[in-house]
Image 1: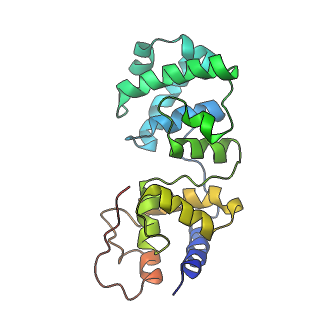
Image 2: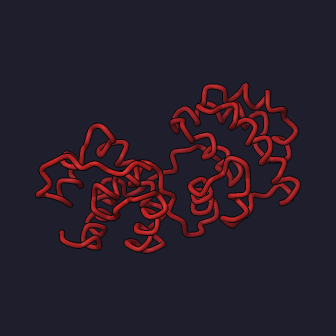
Length: 218
């Protein structure tokens, strides 16, 4: 496989074989609960997020009700998540902003989403593509690592990785592909379990690679 395009086409075929259907790993019911779940997932596993959100959403599953809670009440329900103190403050403030600026609705542009406390480009991208079906390619540490290992990007930073991935696959495939790559990165091409020479996709895209591949960190 001499070109990025050839490698990308193989990757997509292989991932479709492994994951013909791929669910969103964070439990949610609408754009707002997805936004909160993704915000909580920073420095925290999806499994942990799914353990704490039922309690949080039992108290408030919309911006109007969440804005009425105190930071302490929010913190009590999410305290087992990493960075819980700052997340509780951000959840409180972004809920207030949604009520004040958008009548309690989650906005549908990157610019508006990224103005919200605790919401970066990756979080905004997840909400845009999964809640609103607006093309986006969220890049997390798994995608950043694997895209480099598979020769799809030089991976100088996550922004470059995102741009390169978008060029390789059609926009209608971005939603499933980003979930497929993340899942493969957790199951087969892990940070420590594969060094670019172990998993099937690494071996197939780079059959002549003999030494461990060191990916740039996100």
